[in-house]
Length: 296
Image (cartoon, rainbow, N blue to C red; front, side):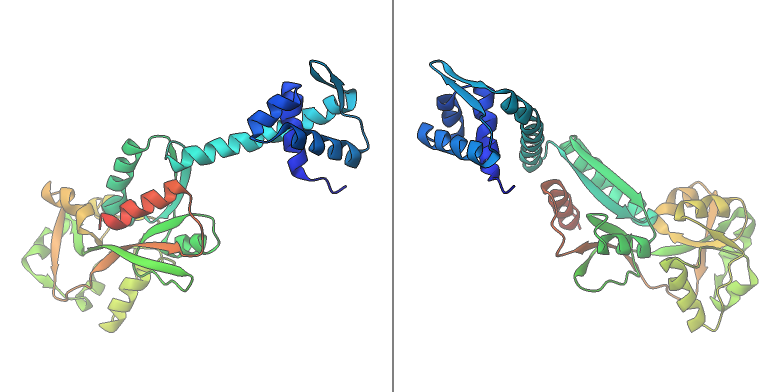
């Protein structure tokens, strides 16, 4: 049955007010047009829906049954319209973000706090991902965008925007304090236990490439699942590790770990935004993406 859905909308208001004229006023239409539409609906359904009286209309039993379904559908549609309108005003809505731990700690947390204070009605969904996982989630449309650390390989229609550069330092537990008096070469680091992220991460690939360029294999004694695990492992004297300077600053200041010098200069890394230029964003996600980019 190919019924014009506009007829159901008109039927909803006529049934709600039991009056063609009131329904026409709410719809911004004319009473003859509303009457004509309801006559067409009755013909298409093959049912009498209204009994006309001097005071308006009464619903037949068929109309009451139909109204129970149409009212439920209209309620959902009107609620959706209200939520979309609220989303434009940033009073409601949600944002889904894939983020690596380093990017969260050294860049995104402050922006999240400021955004949440400005728009408390927006629901933030933060997913902890490695860079490759986050890029895949952006690609398949599971998240609005990702904030991750380089290296991050993206292909069109995905785009990458550098948000902030950062440097990593070499640290060790206090039992390695004697090494502070010298500069270690990457080649010499094979003589010491190493802590690193797992081999499936871009961070491991980053350092594996650097080590290989200096003729050394990166073979960590301890592999951590997350960047947040590295500092406690270093404090427990399990080995040396590279870590973002911002994440180690407090521990170095409190002499819980020691900062070691390296002969070779490590390349800077970047926190970057990865998004799909073909994936439409709601108003909340657009606003937060704008804040992230403009606060670079």
